Image (cartoon, rainbow, N blue to C red; front, side, top):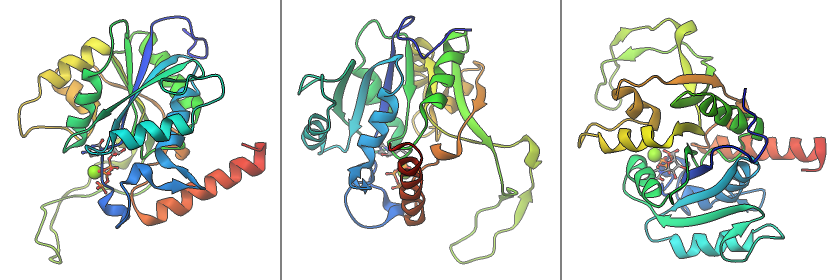
Length: 257
Ligand code: CTP
Ligand code: MG
């Protein structure tokens, strides 16, 4: 088995879509720029990717009019040893403006990747606390030959499929999938670069997927799941901010993080 904790091997880049507004989080700055314990969520997410020794480049997809601000933010939080404009330690970064949907934003990030990158991670800025072991586990599975790898956890709630109704109206249940066969998926999702590009190029207008792996599935290529982590949850609603800050407080108490 290849070991993603070493920098040797195929070159890996992480694309971080961070262009969303965060409507469900409520009014304020774009979600990725909101602070967690005083540091923007996006910076936590970039650090989580740069923490993997295998990741040599991070491409941040900024809010459409926010690329200059995000560049400044990254430079301000650069690690000692990095050059002010372009790198954090041994990890380079690029910033590009995003699009109207997550899928468009990811595509804009992929378009910015240089030659020589073989493995691409796509990681939500809204999952700022993913542990490095999860990141390395995804990379290792791609290195071992899987074209698409997704971290996932069993679901806790029973899930119903419904016939959506008007807001406020009761919704008829159509089916109850067997819970033991369901998984909630997280990021970073990892891909063989060529497969991910092909998946994005094959998208039919109006037929997107809510994650990149969904596009690869449409190609008929295999997608595999590896264990996710409860700290890789997505910050979506206000209560998630409370949980994220509690996780950071626990880390600080445990190891002075
Ligand atoms: N995203 C993006 N470009 C968009 C929409 C979303 O890059 N046009 C990114 C978000 O910044 C986030 C990730 O995709 O990191 C997952 O999306 P989500 O959690 O839905 O974030 P938002 O779209 O910002 O939130 P909301 O749906 O509540 O507005
Ligand atoms: Mg969204």
